[in-house]
Length: 126
Image 1: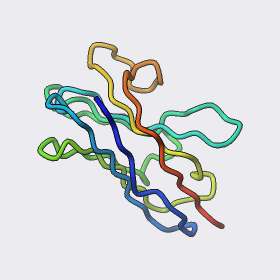
Image 2: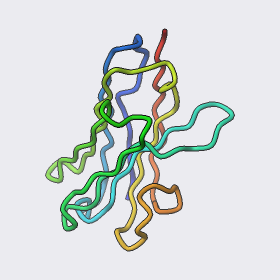
Image 3: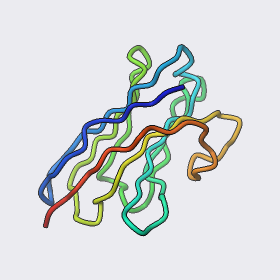
Image 4: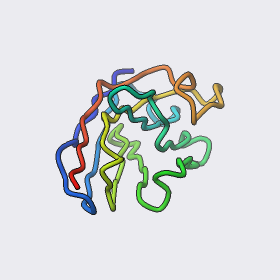
């Protein structure tokens, strides 16, 4: 599986952005899809994830973004989206999409994912 993230940019605090992650392959709907972020000098941290279509597309959300970020997936387009609202300067980071197998049962952890996109920069100015 190859993942291509896009949609990052510069936005003022309080603004919104939507990131997209397009996946190759015919088994997209079977993957857990997640978004992580990493700021300079920090560890990569979990943001949000959605289980596979076969598992009911359950969502997992980090407390830091709850109520502001949502995830959705379009299985027909092999694409997962991250809608980010009410952005804050602390949301500034490189955002990565990832795909993993349901069997790993680790949607909150980086090692629960097998495939990673290249990252897209999100910068929120105050």
